[in-house]
Image 1 (cartoon, rainbow, N blue to C red):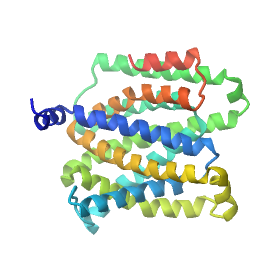
Image 2 (tube, rainbow, N blue to C red):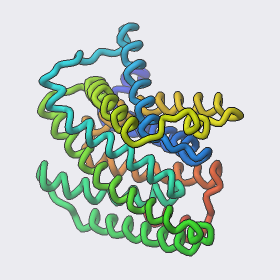
Image 3 (cartoon, helix red, strand yellow):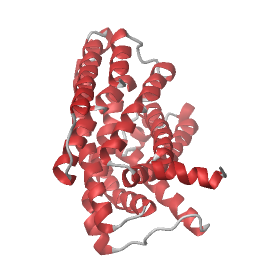
Image 4 (cartoon, helix red, strand yellow):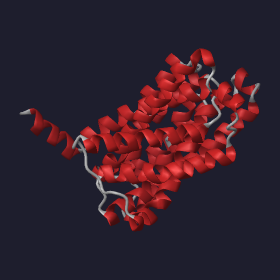
Length: 305
């Protein structure tokens, strides 16, 4: 079988978008964790604005090189797509805040709960049903999250920062709701607008930029002192490179998310996102010193059954 035919087969079966989405998701989560928690970075909206800007710049460059095509800005389409951009901003911001307070293993385990919201949202919006086997898998996901929470609550370092711990779970709850709303709404609008993958990437990021800038100016400290604290001189170059790389990762996850939702379904997309959390959780234990406890490992294992 020739490579083009083989790639066409992977695309038709949904394997290729699933694999690329997994790779982009892992890169995005690990990079954001490094920036947000490694050096007490507190300008989340600014970081997300940089990521969206990098996505638009990459799209413009690729289009200039005739590598991609997408619909140019249209006011009517923008008005229709704007609620999705708002949900996207809510999803990525609450996700970044969750990562700031929670370890990667705990974050990834609780992220699985989004699948339940998406599955039942698909039943309400697109028809279908939830089988007994699917319901059993949902219960295992909930069980794994409970195990992870109990394990974390017994950790001495987390007891010492219980306020941060509670904030982390609050942000995680907001992230699950906003993520499910974003995926379901985007799927519905992709069908109604007949958007292609790069159309979705372009409008998602373009409409997000003004929202992120406004939120950053309103809620974040733009003083010189705060910038110096967020970007310490001794690691400034490393952090800038990491932030730019996170923008490239954001471009990858924007494209592969739209591709995955279009080729498969919202539930399949979210299930894949849950399955790829195993290597993401492992990376947190390996690279960020997240505790390797029986609760964490058991929660991850049960959540993947």
